[in-house]
Length: 232
Length: 232
Image (cartoon, rainbow over all chains, first blue to last red):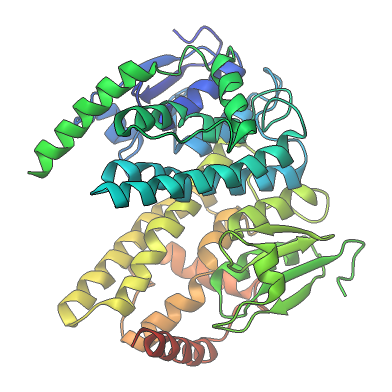
């Protein structure tokens, strides 16, 4: 049961970084929800009906009305429950525009570069892919300094939109580090983000939905094996 | 001069559909701005400084602060000048989420399919690409019916976010029809959108920034020739 007046269902899967985004947003707003887990490789009737265009998780269903795409869902949660808990998007329109810009950058540029490490063939390619990810983090270190203004999070004292957009990938970042024996989030190169990652994962809205690295690494191996079996 | 208290500069180019989006939004809010035209194939120092990540137009510079990405700029204009003219995004959070979803669909799926017609090699490929574009329009016809609820625009009585997101491509849709001798926006297949396109182009916020089809077709030929010369 949702535990509030609203009927909230979230279609998702625990290893998905995109699913973590609405889960953190719902936690920030103290909104209970039914978490309906999709199984890897299959799609439920409810998912196909709720997101017929992309057939992808996450989908939030609020009183029967489906909303798709993780960042759109996070904005919906923030805009629909303005008085339940702190704001997720910054209050000033310019800060909101900047947060939206970098959230898109993370999805369109940075996370694909992280996936590029696993896809790289050979040591030289892996090294180049690793450098690209680190360059992105160095760029985001600057963004963090500008947005946080000396506070703990991109959003200031509390987790906000950009914290959620980047933070949801921390589990996969650690798995990539572990499975490829590389160091990506380095305390000497990106000290601000290094500390931010610790604070983010320890936050009460995050800690119960952030997967353990070992468990996620195990899931990653299973998912990769299934993808390779389907491709062969 | 901007003609208002704010210093507004828009870096753009008249044939760009993405640049048309903030221009329409600024017109809706009755905000004057300096239109600084970038030349095709070159990038001004101001553009490189204002959007160092993507180096792309449009960029809106408000009192010295740059904002990039057309849909983010439109939301910024709506959120920063709430009392200047009608709202661009719908008022209800769910309607906003739906508008954002379909705006992303138009950019990620539908417009690339329109570009696919020009790129198609041979009659069969062109026919298949044309069918894909029309299927997208049939889908958007349904979205139009749901959003407009019998009124003229996706946004109801007035042009809104989704009108801007799709409408900015009408010039290029007509150029694609003309240069490839195909019929895409068909009164029999998509009667709602057919009428909507007429109303959209006749609107006072749009008519002065929507390029004439012949002029745009001429520009398209020049742009394509330059791209081919660079590629060869």
